[in-house]
Length: 133
Image 1 (spheres, rainbow, N blue to C red):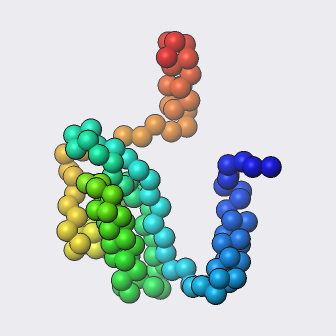
Image 2 (image 1 turned 180 degrees about the vertical axis):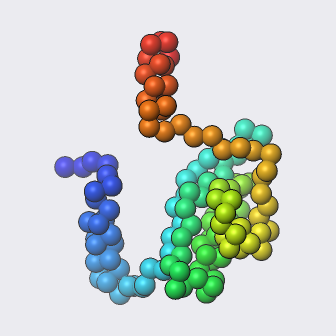
């Protein structure tokens, strides 16, 4: 049976990836990750990456791992002709903000992030059905 992975599959997928890495004799310690997806810029007319999460274990921070993850994403963007790598950061997260700015990233303070979740998302989603959308 083939189906899309669901959140409950994460431990199983993790175990399988570790098994594969051990089989290939490429088992390394995981110290962080970058979770991203493609987005598209209307103004530039090309794709880019949106970085949803960048995380490095606290005891491994300062070792260049976060920079290496971002550098790899930037390399892929350049290779593919993408013109943006962007993400959001919580306003109170001063260490991350300082890190990002040290890499040359600049805040986009003319934008405000909006989000629909839970009841508001459900209400608007069902309103679309009533409106014939």
